[in-house]
Image (cartoon, rainbow, N blue to C red; front, side, top):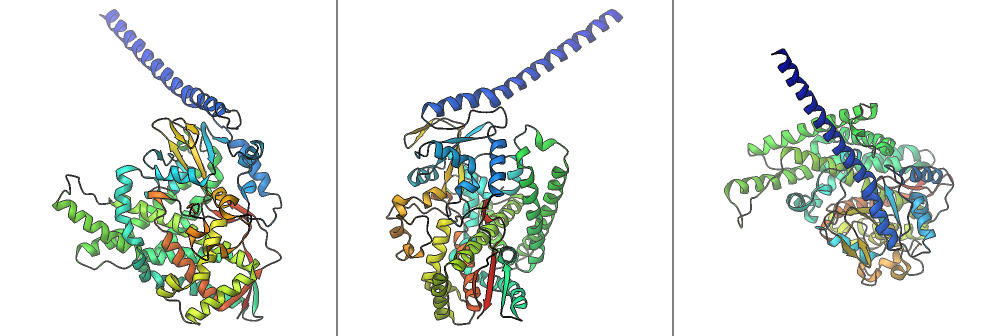
Length: 533
């Protein structure tokens, strides 16, 4: 009997060991396939089409080399030029140069090849075919910052877009102007304290503009709960810093499971943000459920839209299709995304506008003359901002052309081989769509494509692009940025109030150093000399 039991135990042990070996071998096979066989096959396909890129390095690809070149670039002086691609993407720039100018190159984001697309026709084509070219799945770190509408696909994306859209309708934005005005006035009071004695002062306006847009979004999004909104912004800023410092580790398999100090703090900040948003949204939701009217801030409009859809979901199916409403967690994610995307987009537009107007005093004078003719020294109103600031609008369009908030965006092909122009793209390849190159193409914009010239927009965007639709600061196609009107109205408001109160010029201490993590921002700030009018 003992012998039989021992034999049974031995058989069980052998079976378990065999199964473990099978599991380990399968995992190893998947790792080898994903991190070597597939990348090398894709490399061969791209090389055969004449694309230039480095040979794939196991696991890390070009990450180490790209990080080294960026560190070098960020520590070197840079001339005041609007072609900053060599500084923000030095590896791609070097590959472009070695390609003889035919703009056919690729880099490796870990084991994933990323092909650079610079032609505006191809960029629009990829944007338009959203069901084929999808957002790349984010690594753990970026997923923390960019969840929500921006990453959804298919039916889920359509549902969220439909429910969020009303919050960004142009007519709804007029109710947010008081929030913008309060945020701007409070920050400019600090400027006034600095210029009181002499009438002039040198200020790094970049932190101020970040503060204005953070406060404006907190007020416009959450109304009376804006102080909690500011806490959320501070936590998100901390998250961005942690993500930037640890991005180079994010492609190591299983890194997100390592019990690092960074991982622990990211988890803590994520929970704090969730708790704050849960509190804000929960209070509003309860108030609406007992009959209180929705407020005219972004959260109120979003809740109202979601509430109507939820009631519809209870009563009917339209065309046999189930009606949806956002879950509580989805509401939280959309609010967080609004912070991340909206605040920085407007801040970078404002900072480059002040830098360029500080350098081009003639355009600053024209803009101020238009603002004073439209509003005098009164608070700017919605109609004037939306319809009557032609010169200010031309300037903002030109700033967005030279310094689009997102210099490049990505799409990945998952399902089947397809053509983009004359390029055959196999599944698994990411396309990096370079907005910067589309905006500097001399065939579209003329010989002065790399110069600041708002006059090119005097007859509108279509005329400026010669009918090519090569202007893509907010993307293109069905996924075009939902918050573009919000950003433009806020930027016009901020610039109008600044121009009413101050003239300004670039300080001799200003260092031109565009950099990019998510948005194109000034690495060393924006030192401006203000003069009270």
